[in-house]
Amino acid sequence: MPDAKTRRRAAQKKTPSSKAGEYVREEMEHIREGKHGARSTKQAIAIGLSKARRAGVKLPPPPGGKKTPKATDRKPSARRSRATLNALKREGHSAASPKELSNHAKASARQRGSASLRSAAKKAVRTKGAAERSAAAQKAARTRARNKS
Image (cartoon, rainbow, N blue to C red; front, side, top):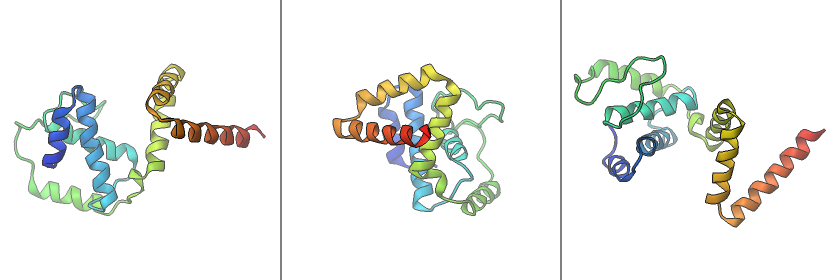
């Protein structure tokens, strides 16, 4: 069940993807706090999106997977919920680390293609401050130097 704070933040957002992002963010916080873990960043995001769908956010169904029941559907089985949570508690917590999230974002961008990568980079330039831009440029220069040889 999503926190009331998450539901409020999501309600303030305009687009379904922004609303869903709040639920994914909450899921990452849960993993970092140690409430449970996740096998991968992809699984952590999927859990957040599933919560968003259950909360009534108008998102497309998951690709290939089973449909998430709507909020109006039947009550989930307590035994099944407990079993799922116990299984997640045995998983690691690195799926929500900044490094793993960064790796996931980069891999997703590469899958979408160079034009998408370019537009994401342009947006980063617009939204970052001068200091953050400078740090990113220095990091990029180091990466290029390391990969050149």
